[in-house]
Image (tube, helix red, strand yellow):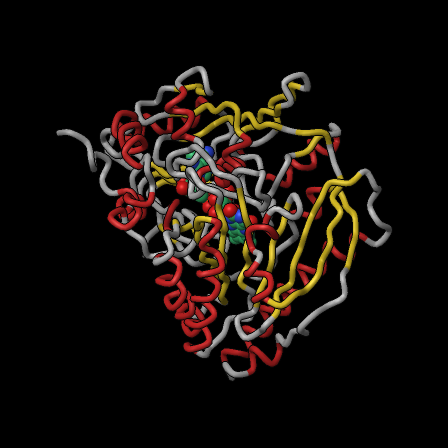
Length: 438
Ligand SMILES: Cc1cc2nc3c(=O)[nH]c(=O)nc-3n(C[C@H](O)[C@H](O)[C@H](O)COP(=O)(O)OP(=O)(O)OC[C@H]3O[C@@H](n4cnc5c(N)ncnc54)[C@H](O)[C@@H]3O)c2cc1C
């Protein structure tokens, strides 16, 4: 039996047995670990809380768990920024900012992941005026393959800065991140329901109808649940906490339906029956409590970023493909939107983006649903979320990223020997020198 340490993702959908598992608390320990590994020809992968669903962080070399390298380094109120250690969780950061009367301008649906992990995979929330999380970064510090420590921003090493903001852990270990912050704010949430076809007909107009919009749709239903968030000066409504946990309860119900569906697949749509229209529900809460909610049930997710205008066609394609397939996940298809980004490997690079997310229980019968959906998305110019399930390879991805070669050049210069390589990066980015002159 191997006495190697073992590591697995939050969802348990990827695991590895690294030769060494380290949890540094200081930057010089990270430098030392990278130098030592490079010296003996071992690869290194940095990792956060493992909230990615694929083999992105896996290695049989040195795994650097950054979750103990955490904490706020400083707040610059004049510049409107906060600097944090890379392993700080968004939850911890939200709480610290809240105490200082500040907040992040946008968030995804979960706050458990680390700042660097969220950056590395192109994390995003929703909102047509909001780029992904990488767009909130103003400065980065990273340890590269030769053990040197590099700082970068739009003036100092701007090309490295652009690339490192969405870098899959392929350029080095990010140790510090400076992020733009705004004064603490509340959000008014308006929850509704409308026929899917009517929503898709005016999709681009709807996408800009509130600061943050999203909709969720169950493939057997004709209507979608909508969510629109706007800033408000109003205080939190008295029972706001109840709404906070409604989404968590819905996830628990999905988990239970998923179990029932393993025995009788046909039962899933009956357990998740939805009305054609619904009453509007409105409430106000602190922004970070509206954006994210606790998600205790494990699942597997696949998400793709598309040109915004392709979302109606993708949804029509998914409806056809999933209904023909006839077996359903209890989780809704979630649609979000976002502003363009200029980081070369950002899935939102250069275009207004619609994000289409599918979740399934982690067992075989359900995973097949993702195999049915992926070609529909891929055919409409989609770029997969770097941290979620997908089967794309570098050959498929390269033509979808206009500045792919800029990233490849920076990677080849910083990590010529592939210290930060692993099998997943080999598949999605190709070898370190791919596309480079010999
Ligand atoms: C329940 C759930 C909800 C989610 N909701 C959203 C959502 O709303 N929006 C969205 O976009 N995504 C979402 N995700 C995906 C998730 O946020 C990302 O995959 C994110 O990367 C996870 O961060 P992490 O700290 O767990 O990173 P990990 O999964 O641990 O690592 C991801 C990548 O980051 C790299 N990395 C980690 N630390 C460093 C570092 N210090 N320096 C360099 N590279 C590093 C790793 O090498 C790896 O390549 C969700 C995931 C789950 C499980």
